[in-house]
Image (cartoon, rainbow, N blue to C red):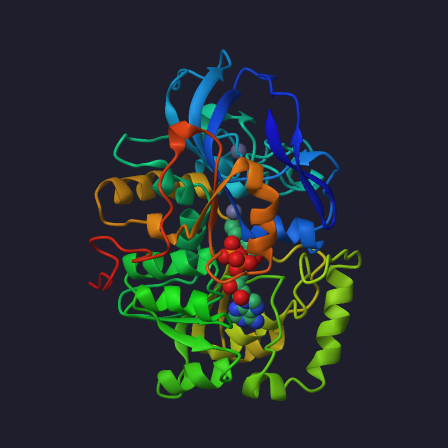
Length: 428
Ligand SMILES: NC(=O)c1ccc[n+]([C@@H]2O[C@H](COP(=O)([O-])OP(=O)(O)OC[C@H]3O[C@@H](n4cnc5c(N)ncnc54)[C@H](O)[C@@H]3O)[C@@H](O)[C@H]2O)c1
Ligand SMILES: [Zn+2]
Ligand SMILES: [Zn+2]
């Protein structure tokens, strides 16, 4: 079968690999109809998340059709249409039962302290092959897989595999409540999805910060207020928009690949921080293998965290979903302490939020489809990665069509995040 395979930092390929087989009674084999490329995949290719093994199939977002199930899987049969949550969890340990699927005690072969297991990640994340392939083995399929009604198509469901659950989780972490003013730092797919999720959880105003014109435009189509960090100082701008107070809640949807402003007042005031960020980048990504302007790691690993802490109001909350791997050692802790902030973060417990999101989509309350701005065939997957990595205009979220069964006409981002209850928000 065809699969996108990680070979080294800066080197991924579309390879022919053997099809997966059932290995455990709770496994299923799913024929993938649609997969997608995520900002998380970029960390592995840029070298900002270490520990990948050569030959690992990439990808942790997929929709497909169950091909075969192990003897222990009583709730799915061949032919069922499903969405696959990015993280893998056992469903029986106390963490899973409490909804902390990302902290499952049993899924990681490294033991209870070994961390979150997800598809297509580093060895420390369970060493599982990913979902950018024609077929995938899904462990604990009886717990993970979520069935799809016919009314939810692949273009909608693929965004429920990771992006919308993560954004929903981000708004929960940030304690978004009725009437809150919320800043979302980062307007990639996760930040875009967070606009609708914050509104569905009661946000009154949503302000989105990024440095890319096309992504800010996509946020404005969702009626978010936008701040361009290459045109104004984002912390000053957010304070000005909030009467000098700052926002009640911040969702950091950038993470370790944060970039410095390249121009404008925020760039002018970097000064000594430039050296600090150089040091951070060397620590985070000692091995870099960029190819021209592709696969270049972020050059300011802690900057989104710093801006988040600075733009939130005193006693406010910062919810961090942008990924920071263990080697990240810098966080503005003193500043956060002095403001009595609540800081919450982590890997999404996808399975916890996914069924609710499927219902929201099926009911018409949320339509995530328009967030997909590019639809690529498997044969063009590596080129699609490169375009997404360079954040080329219009390459905000890339779906990979792996089978005609799932094929849906590409949207161009019109009316992203729309739906009956998300355009203006729901406030109690
Ligand atoms: N916690 C989780 O479970 C989870 C799940 C999925 C994704 N993620 C993470 O969420 C993050 C976003 O994912 P994505 O797919 O949207 O990625 P992406 O790379 O497409 O988006 C990142 C965005 O941040 C912007 N950005 C860069 N530097 C910035 C800065 N200093 N200030 C503001 N914006 C800045 C970029 O221009 C880009 O638009 C990634 O770190 C990804 O790993 C986390
Ligand atoms: Zn993802
Ligand atoms: Zn568990």
